[in-house]
Image: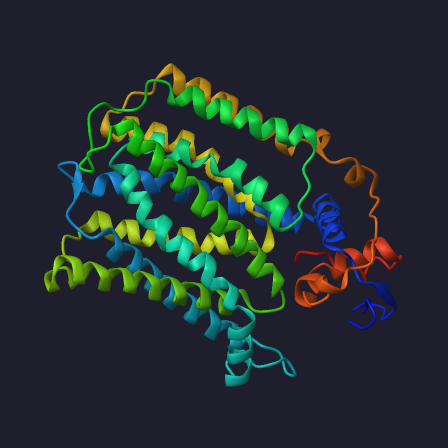
Length: 403
C-alpha cells in the first residue's frame, strides 16, 4: 500500500485504501452474496456446533461425583489443548503434502517464524479461553446443564457490542431489538431457577452465581471477538497453522495453571490423569472438536452466527438433561426458548439488514495515517472492496470469504 492506495489482486488497478467503516460495510454486502457452497459450510458449522455444544454441559454434569469434581478442571483443559495441537499438526502435514508447485512451503522455518510473528495476537484469546474453560466447570456447581447453556446465550449481546467497538461491525435497529428479545427470553427462563443455600466462599448462592455469570459472559465474548479479529487479520495464513499457535498458547497457559495448583496444593496434584473417567475422556474429545469447529466459524463465518448456533443447542441440552438426569423442563424454559427462537429469526431476517446493505451501496473514505499500519486487516477486505470500487468480470470476482 502506497500513498493511501492499494492494488487490486485481480485487475491490478489502483484503489483507494478503505477505512475500517468501509471494511465493515464490505463485509455486510458480502454476506448477502455468499454462494451455495458457503451456505452449505455455514449449515455444517451450525449443525456440528449444536451437537457439540449441546453435549458439553451434559458431559460436565456426568463428570461430577457427589456434586463435585474428583479431577482438576485445569487438567481437562490442558489435555484438550494438547489434543487440538496434535490435530493441527496432522492437518498441517496433510495440507503441506497437497501443496501445488510454486506455492510457499508451509513447513519451512521462515514461513513458521513469520507466521508466528504475525499471529502473536492469538495469545490474547488463548489466555481468555483458558480462564473461560475453567469457569465452565465452576458454573456447573451453581446451575443445572440447561441453565448453564441458556446463561451462555447472554454472550451474544456482549459480542455484538464488542464487534461494533473493535471491528466496527454494523447492526440495524431490528437486529438490536432481536438481541433485546434474546435477553428477555433468557430472563424468562431464569425465573425461580437459582438454587438456595450458600457456597464454600461464604457468599449467598445468588451473589456468587451472579459474579461468576458476569465473568462467564464477558471473558469468552472478548476472547471470541479477538479471535475472529486475529484470524481474519492474517487471512492468507493457513488456518491449521493459526490453530497450532492458538492451541499452543492455550496449552502453555493451562500448564502454568497446573504449576500454580501444584504450588498451592502440593506435588500430588501434578498427576493430570488423577480422578479421570470415561466421561472426562468424552468431555476432552468433545471440547477439542468444539474448539476446532469454532476456529472455522471465526475465520470463514462470524462470531454472531457462532453464538446463535450455540443458542439452538439449548433446546437439545434441556431435553437431554431431562431424559438423562430427570431435570424438569418448566414452562419458563419453554417460553424462554420460544422467545429466543423468535429473536434468532428476527436477527437473521432479510428485513433486518442495514439500509446500505439492502441497496448495495458502499461508501469509501481515505484511511487516516494511524490506520494505515493495519495493512493485513485491510487487505483481507480488498476482495470485497474491489466489488464496490470497480466492475469486474463474473469469473474475476474474489469474495471476502472463501467459497
